[in-house]
Amino acid sequence: VQLQASGGGLVQPGGSLRLSCTTSGFTFSDLAVGWSRQAPGKEREGVLCISNTGRVTYYAGSVKGRFTVSRDNAKNTVYLQMNSLKPEDTAVYYCTRRWHCHTPVQDFGQGTQVTVSS
Image (tube, rainbow, N blue to C red):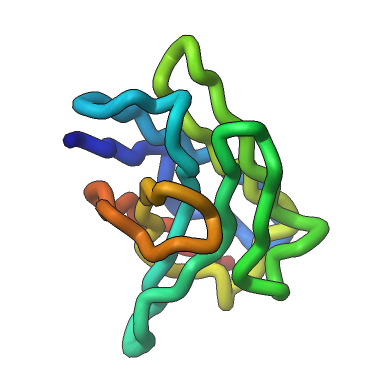
């Protein structure tokens, strides 16, 4: 199983970034996928998840209205669109896979660094 995130970088407060996660080694369309993040000095936290039917679950209330998740089953890829970024969004972002959005994470992919700073 592989989950490879990309698209991170340095962005100013108020800016946007789009992360992508390409996957392989499992039947992508059958599972829930999503994103977690780990900020400096903090524990890793779930951000959001999209089920195999497209239902979205937010774990971090602070991103509601700013972050959206989508998936392309034909490309085995999940996306995270992040708008109105804040310094507190600075973290390493990991894509994840689960059986369902209410079950534990099965696998974390390699992370991608997102830094929000002026």
